[in-house]
Image (tube, rainbow, N blue to C red):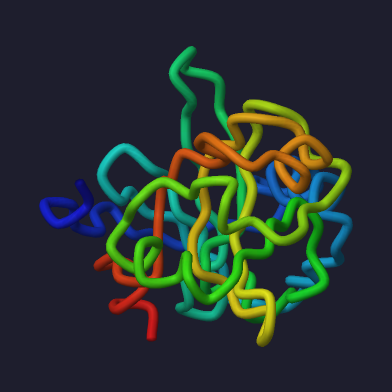
Length: 169
């Protein structure tokens, strides 16, 4: 998917121009981004809009199947905010599949944030080290995902092996 995408139209942006986007993200993930004084840029990455904070891609704006806009942290952003909400923890058996971009099956899910609602963006982390592995769309609620034994839990959107992650490093 993203192998054909490149960063285009990268330009500086004022904080006041993206303040609503950042506030929505902070409320959703229950974090404080504290980007005051940081150098902010926006760019296009395929169909996504990216926000760079001090030259590091921290947030992404994506659209769902109904063309509704959602803002979320990138995997690099989650490294800086490991306490962020909307997480799903997976065991080590699921990691090789996620690293190749597979959807997350509930058999590998060990725990999930109870505030997750079906159809919203979530981030997947490894249960031992709490490091981000992927982001995707939840297919079920958090409590349901943690207790289910069969089926797909998350439709993967962006993962560690993805080109963007390698570029951010």
